[in-house]
Image (tube, rainbow, N blue to C red; front, side):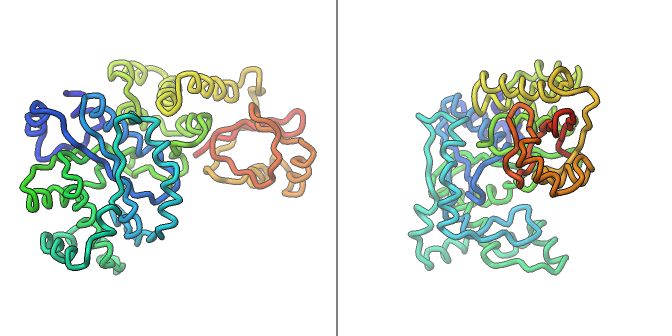
Amino acid sequence: MDELLTRGVEQILPNQETVVARLKQGPLKLYHGIDPTASTLHLGHLATLLKLRDFQVAGHEVVILFGDFTATIGDPTDKLAVRKVLTTGEVETNLKDYKDQILKILDPKTTIFRHNGEWWNKMKVAEFLHLATQITEREIAEREMFKERKKQNEAVYFNELCYPLLQGYDSVALDIDLEIGGNDQLFNMLVGRDLLKKLKNKEKFVLTTKLLTDAAGKKMGKTEGNMANLNEPAEEIFGKIMSWPDDLMPLGFEILTRLPKEDYETLLAGHPKEAKLQLAFEVVKLLNDEKVAQKAKENFEQVFSGNGTLPEEAEELTVKTGTSLAAILVDNKVVSSKSEFTRLVKGGGIEIIGEGKVVDEKITITKPVAIRIGKHRFVKIKLQ
């Protein structure tokens, strides 16, 4: 129970002692909500999914709630600019592969999937306005991000003010005991706690998970260059993790793996590269299997070992993810011009070691790779 309530956990409300007492009474019904604002989930979601799996293994009922309705409204959480409002069609497209990605971690036999459109698409305006009497404008407007927007003379729209009420009511509709989510969702989760108490006189517990942040405290997410998606090829996930800064390793082991603490602390006390290799291996194993993880590790080591495959003096270039290979090679004077790059590609003169010849002139680099140009020139490309 200690591991269940501490590993990767930021805080528990109202307090850990109350939750422990409730756990001793029997299984909980808990949920995690995901708005399908993109076509894939990323490693930031993995921390929460692993915590849900911990509860699942302990015998509790896990519900994944897809915000097919709320995604069309726009969650303003942690945003100093208005989030793009999605159409129903865009939401349905984004949702297409979510279950497959989630079930890489959760048990397919016991995981329950719901959509909040089940109740929001049926609620009448009068019912919503009555629900809105449970929360004041002042409570919503006091959120730090809204105060910051006003300070910068940025607009705050009514749909954004409504969003916490919408997410909060999901707890009532599901009649849950516990909500789990990232620490950035705390405000919305507490609105749900208040609503459940007011409308059903029921206690709702809140557990927030730690966010994957860099040394400066900036959250890594879809817009960050080296945040891997859950459905990316194993080699790309492995390579992106290997590009992470060393100071991210302790948090990475804690929230993205289930390696025992004493084991990863021993790794962290040794060579940083070995620790990072093991972190990448553990994450890829969770999302695939041990055989795939081992192959991804061997591929990375082969390409970047400097032994056999590449000459030791191979030039190393560090770039932002998504940069075109043409721009990398031309800007760093590896090839003389864009036309020279085109000529080499058409003649089969550029190869990604371990993957084959480059055939697409518009190829972009999204993971660390080693490139052969002509017969004798090699470069290693790493991500910032």
